[in-house]
Length: 249
View: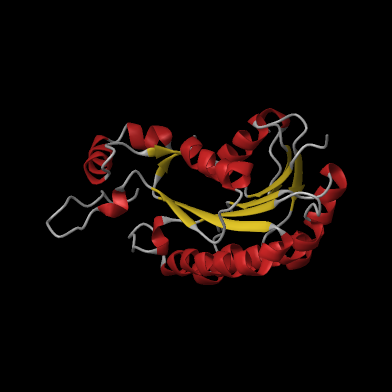
């Protein structure tokens, strides 16, 4: 039986890497689209296929889909976890990386989904789809909010092809790259403990588990939905003075 083929966009660090690792544990054949290919010791699975492409290059990312399909067969899952990290114009970069690249890849991938099995697309958003965070620029907020409507649009458009499209929106989470910074910063830890009803920060692995659920058969009748994974932080009304997070370093 052919293994499920999952393509992760931005799967080399942070939540993206955790998603790749979670899907690898489920036995998926993995393709990872990223700007830089990690060394062998950093790859999440021995047979994971890494495709190098700049998400600002539309032709390069269009070529990436058939390249991944040639390696692992038709797509079953497509997950977007990319983030603009350039030093150019932040507005243009955020919109191009989050919105234009996602649209280009979904439309390039649509014809490559397995016709004999259900398909899934999952977009990782942010709490900034609804709220304003001082840690991110305006382009980040607009791009993440736009992704949610794009997700709904493609859920309707791709539903007849048996492809579900959903989103996961986390707040700030502990990632491998930032875990020590947060855990060693007592004022920041105290802030999140007081602001999150569950009393702690979430982890990249917990976000990845929700993505994996949306990719799997237990989410077979869920489409067009944004699942907020924030430990209840967005439940609280800030109608009284609350401590603000310390300024970013």
